[in-house]
Amino acid sequence: MNTVSESIVKDMSLAHNGHLKIDWVKEHMPVLNRIRERFEKEQPFAGLKVAISLHLEAKTAYLAKVVQAGGAEVTITGSNPLSTQDDICAALVEDGIRVFAKYNPDPAEYKEHLIKTLETRPDLIIDDGGDLITILHSERRDLLSQVRGGAEETTTGILRLKALEKEGKLEFPMVAVNDAFCKYLFDNRYGTGQSVWDGINRTTNLVVAGKTVVVAGYGWCGKGVAMRAKGLGAKVIVTEIDPIKAVEAYMDGFEVMPMLEAAKHGDYFVTVTGNRDIISKEHFAVMKDGAILSNAGHFDVEVNKVDLNAMSTSSRIVRKDIEEFVLTDGRKVYLLAEGRLVNLAAGDGHPAEIMDMTFALQAVSLAYVNEQYKNIGKKVLNVPFELDQMVAQYKLEALNIGIDKLTDEQKSYLESWVE
Image (tube, rainbow, N blue to C red; front, side, top):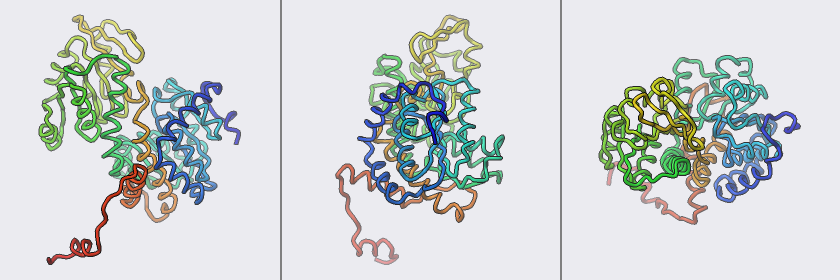
C-alpha cells in the first residue's frame, strides 16, 4: 500500500511537526502503550482492514498506530471539519496509514473523505458521532458485507446506533464505548471539563472569574464543564430537561432555571446536550450585549446559526475562531468555532492522560468485537466490565497506586445471605 499516493492530505511537508506531537502524547499514554505491547505480540487484527473516523489530532493518531501495531491495515478520516490537524495527517501517511482528511474541508469534501474511507472495505470500524455507520446503512449499503463490527466513541453516535437497532436495521454489532465507566466518569467529566475551558480561554483571552456561565445539559460532560467553570471563579447556571439531573445540579450548588431565563444572565454559554436548537431566536432576543456562545456537543446544531444570522444586521470574524454578530438593536453576541466542538475546533481536545484510558477502551473493544462478532448479534452492546476494570487497573499501575483486595472471607461474606 502506497499511503502517500492513496491519501488525501493538505501538505506532506508538515509531517515532521506531526511526528513531534504524536511522540509527545505517546509519552503520556502509558495504558495505550501497554495495550500496544500486547497487540504487537498477539496480532489481533492480522490481515484485517480497520476504518477510523475520529477527531484527527495527535492522541487519535497514536490510537491508529496502536491498532496498526496489532496487524491492521488502517485508514483514518476526521469526524469534524475543524478538529483535523494537517501536520498529524501527514505524519500518519509517513507511518503507513492511509488518510483522507484536511482541516476545514467544505461539506462535499468532508463527505467524500468519509466515503473514501469506507470504500477501502473495512472489516472493523471505530466511529465518532456515527457518520461512517450512517453512510453504510443508507447510501453505501454495498460496502456492508465485509464489516464484522466496531466501536462508537460518543453519546450522539450511540443514540443514532440505538435508533438503528430499535428499527431492526443495525447490520453488525457495535460497542458503546461512551457508556463504559472509564469513559464517562473520566473522559466526559474531567476531559470535557478541562478541554472546553482550554478552548474558550485560549480563543477569547478573557477572564472567567466573576462572570456568569450557563451550561446547557447536566450529563457527565455538563457536570465537568460546570465544575471547571466554578473552579475558575464563575457563577454557574444549569439548564436541563431531566428533573433528576436538575435536582442533582441544584444539590451540587448550581442555580437551575429554563434557558429563556438563563439567557438573560449569561456571559458565557456552553451547550452540552447532543440535541438541536438549545439556543435559538427567543434566547438571542434577551441576551446581554457581549454574550459568548459555544458548543461542546457533537454537531453544530445546538446553537441555531440560521436564527442568529436572520436576527443580525452584520457579522465578521474579530479574532481566530470568534465570529461577531450585530443584532438589529445593536447588541453584539459572539459565536466560537462556528458552533462546532469548542474544545477541538478551538483547542487540542482532551488531555493525553484522559484519552489514554478512552482510547485503550476503543482498542480492546475492537479486539473483543473481532473475536466475538459471530456470537454477539446485530446490536449495541456495552464494553465488557472486565475490560473496563482492566483499563482502570492499568491506569493505577501506571500511577504507581495500589488498592486493597478482598480476602476469601470477605468475598464469602458478601455472597452470603446470613451473617
